Image (cartoon, rainbow, N blue to C red; front, top):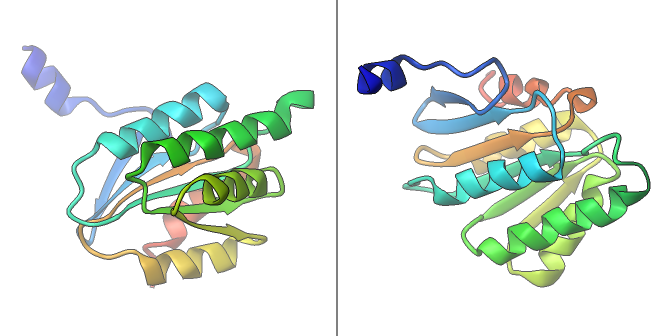
Length: 153
């Protein structure tokens, strides 16, 4: 019964939602974000089997107050420590710190974007069959637009 229940389990929309399309797996986790949930999403990405690249697409974690810059730097440090994330793509002024920190501490390909249209277009150029992506950001960043946009032709 447990096996059957797990096979039929569907997470809430935009909360660790697995989307398989064109041989690519997207973990759509853009309902909300905070430092703990961001680390867990990134850890999940790092532990998933991937025939291709592991790509983290992160947007700002909002409502962190005075600790915002420190927490975004911390996510960059965490990503750098994992060593098996191939790309880090960020969106939003706070996430620029994440990208800079990860790139400073590792050889990760980190790219920061000022608008979602450019982010989506670059993701389309980067992704290939066998890749696994996580898309994560606070609700106010509306990262489901990226999830939707990367599979539109």
